[in-house]
Length: 254
Image 1 (tube, rainbow, N blue to C red):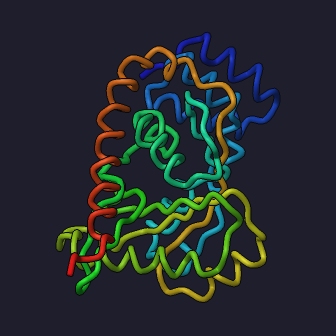
Image 2: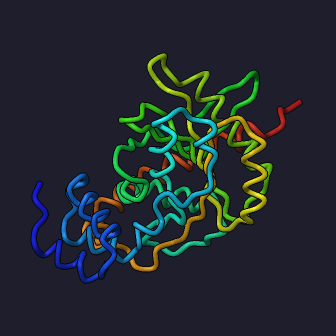
């Protein structure tokens, strides 16, 4: 793909004399086939400044070259475009919005990700567990388990994430899949606490912050009708999960 002159013009205007930054956007435009609107969105969101900024232990827990690739793949903060008003303190609502806008969510995660599912039922012993979101990276051949926390990071969060990663490795992974990677998204974190927590785990994990994008990109506004249809399906799925959980919690009649 050749990069149109108008793309080059916008990159030059936004990047000024930073050749490395400009080269990054040119390469991404070629690799992802960005339209001019998409390029504008990524320039405005400072994708260059967010790439590879999540805190992680990938250099120690993943073999090269995957360790470098995964590190550069994750970012912080993630900017998720959500076209509806809801309480950002509600984890279920945040998760539901990410699934409703799954196309844009995949776009923000980066190229190569495929959506596997949300609240995927995993049975361990006599108990059931439901990881928030599971994705699969086609090039890396790895599952990514993502857990959402609408609060500040706590060290115990990595224990829960690690448990879900073990579940995926043992029950979903195939022999041709590499070990699972975990990503914990939180509203805020103390960098020193995260550093200590990551040093205390043997699993490859990253911790990143996320924010709600104030102005949804043009591509999301154009696909609003499709998103609305998907939203109805998502809402129905969550309703079934909640109904099943409520039934399971009811005491048996004597």
